[in-house]
Image 1 (tube, rainbow, N blue to C red):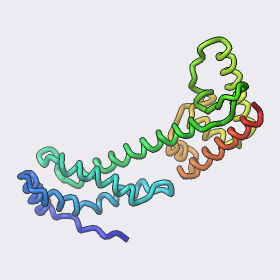
Image 2 (image 1 turned 45 degrees about the vertical axis):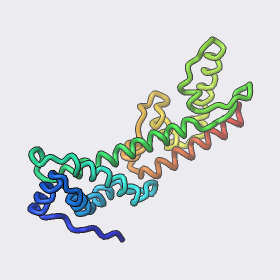
Image 3 (image 1 turned 90 degrees about the vertical axis):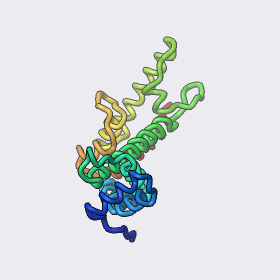
Image 4 (image 1 turned 180 degrees about the vertical axis):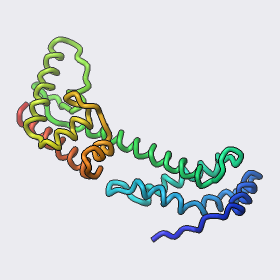
Length: 209
């Protein structure tokens, strides 16, 4: 179990902030070291099976360093209050970036081949722009087939997750966390449902095309 140094007293914090303002790098390091407990506290809010605690703390420390380097005692009362916001912002930016990457990977996953043997991805069906009438008809056929697959092979909850994750069947696109909150389940369970649904769609699409 990690142990962190105790927070500084208001007087100590004020002293080290003044020292750092004068260019004392050791004072900056002291401020960081004595606020690592705060990083762990904020990171705990975002713990899940998908994210390693040490990774979250490492990202949070970046936010803490930024906080120490940009803190203005004339505008903010306590470093801890300001740092907590910076740490949380850093974690949220990282989580959003990973979600975006995860969605891009899922959208690029191969789900079958067309009549000419070319690979088809979910993105090709949902987001491609037709360049002529034949391609337009082919895309409409693929979309119709995908819609039929969605309703035929997915369970009710899988269908809801996929439609809300990718904005299908008139649903608004939402994050895994948003879906989890609306369904009253964990975000990791939503992730498993999404992965299972995509696997089912890929298998069905390959069998039928």
